[in-house]
Amino acid sequence: MRRALFFAASITLAVSTASAQAPEARKLDWGAIAQETQQILQDYLRINTTNPPGNEMKTALFLKSLLEKEGFEVQLFDSTELGAGRVNLYTRLKGNGSKKAIALVHHMDVVPAAPQFWDVDPFSGTVKDGYVWGRGALDMKGEGSAHLMAMIALKRAGVQLNRDIVFIANSDEELSSTGAIVFVKNHPDLLKDVEFLVTEGGDNLVTDGKLHYFGIGVAEKRTFWQRVSVKGVPSHGSRPTKQNPVPKLVAALNRIANYETPLHVTPGVDKFFRDIARMYPEPRKTWLSNVTLALKNPAAKDWILSDIYWNAILRNTISLTGLSGSNKTNVIPPEATAEIDIRLLPDQNPADMLATLKRLAADTAVHFETILPPKTPLESPTNSDFFHAIEKAAHDRDPNVFVTTPMLTGATDRPSYQKVGIKAYGLDPFKVEKADAQRGVHGNNERLSVENVGFGVRYLYDILRYAQ
Ligand SMILES: [Zn+2]
Image (cartoon, rainbow, N blue to C red; front, top):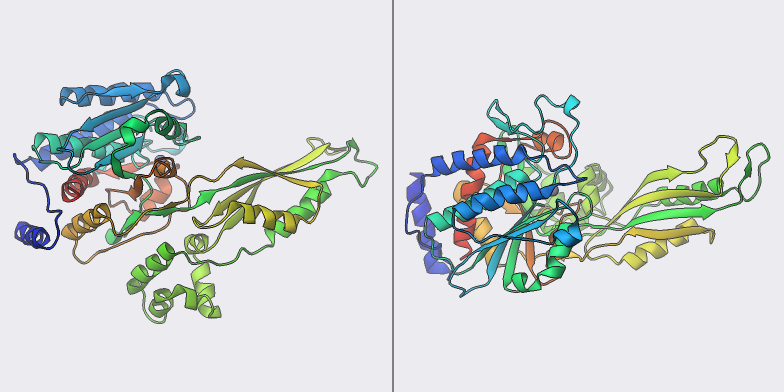
């Protein structure tokens, strides 16, 4: 029954648009491919790429040998810039070149794991209770394994490709994104024909086993971190002076902390709220259908901003985080400093934010220094062939579930690639329970269900076929 619907849908598409799914020369055994992907993920998780130091060379050699067995020509790059034991991996599945390429990009490094808080060894790749467990299962060796096997499956099935499929595995995303930055800088020739790119940064919403929507990441906020400092004259704490930098810094920070950034609805966020409105009863449905209007209604505004994610996609945010003064109670220090985590909406100007901070500080003794400059603003189109291919593959899986575009409040490597004209999307091929993602990503007991492994590789395979 499902198959019949599937074919009916693809015939309609063939008639209505030029981009019909590319034909397969050979049928695939999807049960076997799911098992193979699971084995790859388990082996991948067993290689410890905690960053720092990363040691991604080990995983790159692992991926290289898998790809070479399938007849791919693999190149390892950028060790000079990235340092010993670190590397970027690149390969390509050739199409007929009539359309531009699609790149599958993931990072090989993971954040540290504290084994005492885990139920299993975070680097054991254990399968237990229907899940593959390990640091990186969700962020993002699971996605990397799905990218790898979806591309291998296209090759094995002999799918006629109009677009080359490019596979890139980067070092060092988690600390400073240097892997992607160096790759883009050193290899413009390998990227010049790439039109679309997928990596992390899209979230599907699943709660209590129910899929509410497929999320495609088309926008992310821009980090604009500041160090704030005040210099003073060191002296003994027993005799207070006017040159103590600590009270000056505290007064400025207090004004910044009490400042409410203006609300601002970007087109992508407006669409996201309109899309999800159907999930709510009245009057909330009406409020979300026009969030700009709702923010003028106090009851609606209170409810909307009480959600910390919604609040963060409706404004620039300022979080005071680091703070330091004297390391001795009885010493007035020569300097007091603080760090501020600022996240800008994609269409906002960093210089305006800096001017606001200076106005709030209202003290020329307070200095601001940018410690993480904003990346290229990311807003990828929702009307591209590739976006439509994702929508179609999603609807095949569940015609009742909609596709929407939640903005990411964190940061990914997408802006580095967007900078050279590539349309970059965040795509999570798995249906991960919200609670699992919240606990596991950068936390403890990170795991991906065995069912999701098979689901993800086939979903990605279909997206790549539909995007031809
Ligand atoms: Zn990640």
